[in-house]
Image 1 (cartoon, helix red, strand yellow):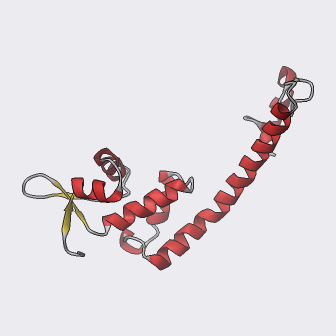
Image 2 (tube, helix red, strand yellow; image 1 turned 60 degrees about the vertical axis):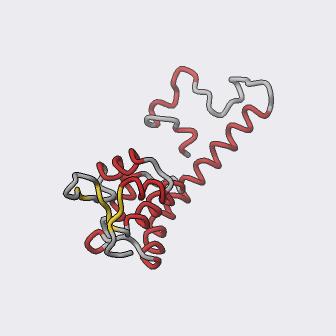
Image 3 (tube, one colour; image 1 turned 90 degrees about the vertical axis):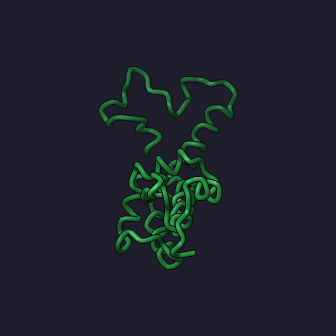
Length: 145
C-alpha cells in the first residue's frame, strides 16, 4: 500500500473526516496532495497515519499550529512512526499538564462560587469591583494564579 495513491474521498472515509477537513489540513500545511491527470487530488497512503496523528493531538487539546510545528521537526516532514509519536506526544505533555492545572483551578473556583447557592458578589473569588485587578495585567488574573 506504500506506493498506492488514494483519492480524497477514500482518505476522508477511511479517516472519518469530511473532505473539507482534508482540504483545510492541506491549506494549513499539515498534509500534502497532488493532482493526477484528471485534476483529482491524490494522497500517498501514509497520509492515513498523519491524519490519525493530527486527530489524536487535537483530542488532547493541541492546536493545529502546535501540531504543524511539531510535525515539521521530523526529517523531511515524514509521517510519524511509533517512536516518533512517543517523542511528539512528550513535547505536548508539559503544556497539557499546565492546561489541566488551570482547568482544575477554574472548576474548583466556579464550584465554590456556584455551589454555595447565593451567588454573592462579596464572596465570589472572581468578582472584581471597580477593576481593582487591572494593575496585575490583562485577562482573568485571579484564575491565572
